[in-house]
Length: 371
Image 1: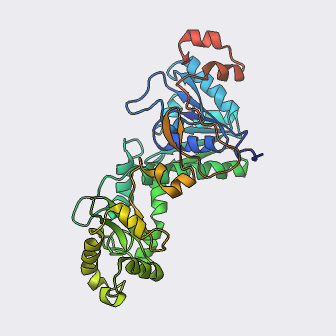
Image 2: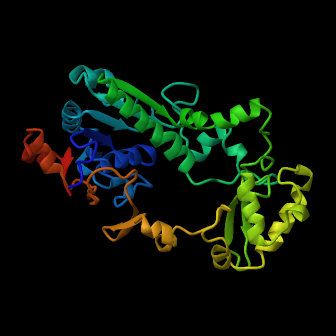
Image 3: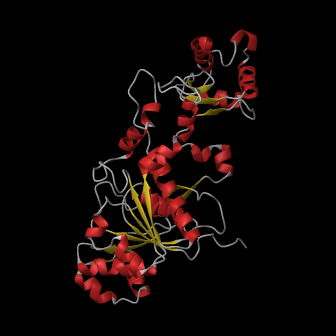
């Protein structure tokens, strides 16, 4: 039998939101935590009731503007090991659910706060989204083509990389310490941390601030994407010399004819040569040419095509839950994760009974609701 998932028995409450906080809750639920989401009576403008980030969680609907709703939330915080919230600074304090009060009632509580700008600083109370946080960290300026504005990237780097992953790191570190405490996770802090490699390269003279002038930002012929005959793309990542040699061999190009890999003066003509080469065949044809090789050349798939890729299919990278395609649990540890997605308030009565609270009177007050 598979061993239990590593976070089985961990109790988490999550105040509903969008982006990095619910994704962090999902990953912890995937690893076995019992995550109770406190949903709002009415969803926000871009909130999705069937979002993948709700996977494996339970839901209770509370009106936090009502005293009875706040009382249930406080009771849940006394039950929980971890609290996750993603509101602007001061919101939870105004609700009477700030860390000072809740840690006094539950000294072992890990109070995990997720924001874009952080709990303090001139921008702390301002609105923002992934693209704004990236812009202030230097990450956005480093992405894209040299002669165009930086493109709006998917919110993988800011929300989920600099946000969710650092929030989870803080939560797990606090749990390991065994002490109740506040985790202040800010996307600008996380992304700045992830930019450490580039600050280091710059200090050593190995990176320039101009876009598309470096070896990882499309500024070299051996690390970029190329257009194929069918308008699709291949990704080339032949950084090391032996992989670069394999790339040229599979393309049928003599190394002495192509010139030195790191000769920057030759890079423009080398890029033009590779652009012409890759334009001769379709993406699928090039995938066959490079199959099984160490040339580090792969087809650029759409997210709809991922499930049909032989490698991704072999790893069961995607699964279906509630008729929706989901990414599989990662990392893979212990027993199979719960795969349901709860409706808002689906577990309200069950959660109230777990807390020893009278469900009927609370439901009658309107401050607590069920699906």
